[in-house]
Image (tube, rainbow, N blue to C red; front, side, top):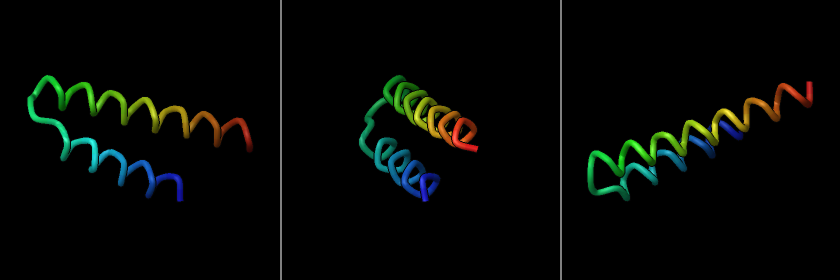
Length: 45
């Protein structure tokens, strides 16, 4: 479920950016969100 939300968020974010530099920032933010979600899952195991 979390993965689907993060993928949807990443797609929405990428669609909103207008430049390559902006895309890089958006991808970085999406990666950070995925990393945080993975950390939360690992801590709850």
